Structure formats: structure tokens, C-alpha cells
Length: 250
Image (cartoon, rainbow, N blue to C red; front, top):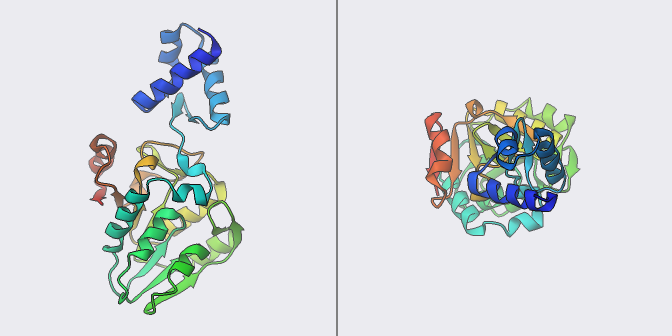
């Protein structure tokens, strides 16, 4: 089998099974494990998959820029935002992440809601301008243009001085092995927000389920709930239910 044919086979198998394991693939294709690992490394560089120990997982489409991500799964994100907004209670202090699903969340707030929203996203802060009864705390730092969020030591230090009732986390990828994202500093900020909140709820549109990104944020033991679209494959959500994580279907 030629290299191009083998890689097409790997992509088709990844789509069908959701993961690739180097050792059984080497036996199935009658090539060395080193050959399979080299294929996976090259395909990972091209953004076709995400390398993990022993094989590969689907790459998250959330690596695209903010404008491109806004066009992905729009109906799902709107439904997730509406369901997540219902979880906010009057008087709460709430961390809201950056990202296109978080935008849909804040747009669905009740105009009469009285709460404090803390965010490191200037986009989210601007979306909250029409809500007269919401106090907005905007965390500063170095602007990451890809996701339009503040990052860095100053951001993490500011988070360490706050305590929130809820944190709505947006992630590139959600997998039974943990939550991950495509930027190291962004992972650090998300982790700090999670640690400073009494409860963490993950906003997960369908394209982020069963995918992986390079930098782990937290393990499943650090999250309390997941808001996912009602159309999501139940098999993809089953591992989280089994871990006692509350699933909110939007």
C-alpha cells in the first residue's frame, strides 16, 4: 500500500472508530509501528488528527480562527447558550469564558438578571453592554487574537483574587481523557478559572466531542456539568454520565 493510500485509510478509520492505535494498525496493514507513528506525526502536522500516546484522536475544528468558528454548529451553539443561561441565578458571580458558544450564552440572559459576570474576553464584555443590571468585570492581560481573550501572568493573578459561583468553560476538545485546548497559556487561564469557581459547567457543541487538542486544561474530576446539544450521540456522552457529571441537553 502506497503512503497516500495508507493515510487515506487511516483518516477513514479515524472517522469511523473515533481513535487510532498504532500497534494493531501495524498488524492490520502489515507495516512497522514506526511507519504508522511517522504517518500519524505527519498527519498531525497537517492538522488532520491529534497525536496521543499510542495512537491518535480526531483533531478539534476549534483550531480555526474566531470568525470561522462562529459559522460552525450555529444552531447547536444557540441552543447550548439558551440552556446554559437558565443555570445562572440572581446575585451570582459567574466566570464566562471567551468563544463563540459563550457569546450565545450571554445573549440569552434575562434582561432583568442581576448578577456579576467576570470574563477575560472583551467580546463577551461588549455583548453584556445592553444588560443594565449586570456588573461586568473585565480581566486584563496579553490579548490572544485567535480567541480574543486576555492571557498571561496578570490574568492568572487577577483570577486568584476572585471566587465565583459558576464558571462556564469553553474548550477546543472534550474527551473522556480530559479537556484540552490549542494554546498553553489559554489552558493555564482556564485551569485557574476552574479552580476559583465552586462549579464548572462545560459548553460543548457536537464538533468538540471525542476530539483532542495539544494542551490539557483539567481532568473530568474537575468539572460538574456539560451542556451539549440534544442531537449529540448518546454514546459520546455516556462516559461523562458514568463519571457522575451532570449532562444538560440543549
